[in-house]
Image 1 (cartoon, rainbow, N blue to C red):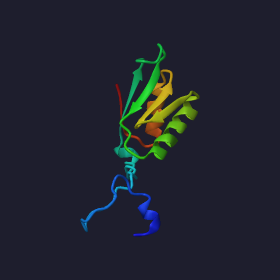
Image 2 (tube, rainbow, N blue to C red):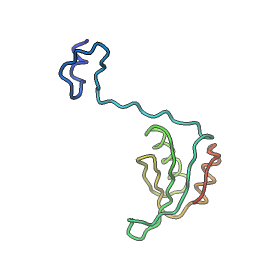
Image 3 (cartoon, helix red, strand yellow):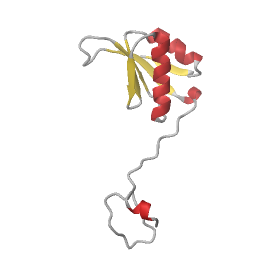
Image 4 (cartoon, rainbow, N blue to C red):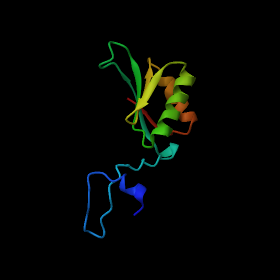
Length: 114
């Protein structure tokens, strides 16, 4: 074991098991599904937003970088603000129809409007 690896161990001081692998606390990022296999749901949400409407895109399966780039594309094309976290994209305002058209152009074929 290298000296650098010892400092990455989490919650284990020593193990006598020869097959034991240390938990370094790093989680593997999920593999991003191809656009045509993503099952995205587009809905209007007003809950806990002070009466304001947002377009909510859920069901994205992939890593955080791909989610952020899709969010940036949608915000730019719709001309509004928004955010992306926890595999959800929030776009300000009721732009469901515009979002569905943009997603279809990007190759997301399994888009359902709720």
